[in-house]
Image (cartoon, rainbow, N blue to C red; front, side):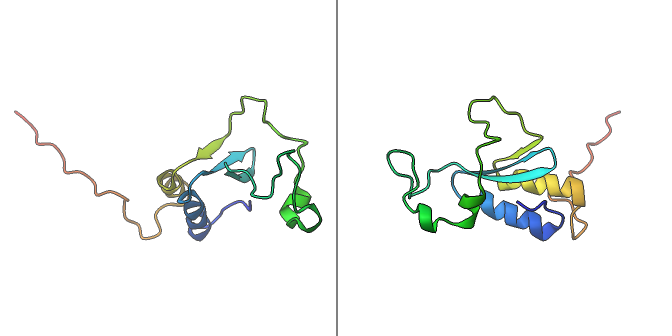
Length: 111
């Protein structure tokens, strides 16, 4: 994924996470979209059923850095759109200057 830098970029990430079985994580400086489903063209022998016409992203993919057998820990890991909202507010601030939740009233001073 391109590194998000604007509120609009982060809004797209929120959109990804509104769909089932998707997460976003950051490893080093690189952002990734992880789709936790199998490709509908994966054959029973784990080979691609549309290999000659597969999308470019499949052609570019490499298992060289695969972590399928590691207990990977990521710099940032987002499973919910609300996590992205909190992160973007911390990094970019709120575009309209308001807090996401209203500030609670102060407790009375007992004396």
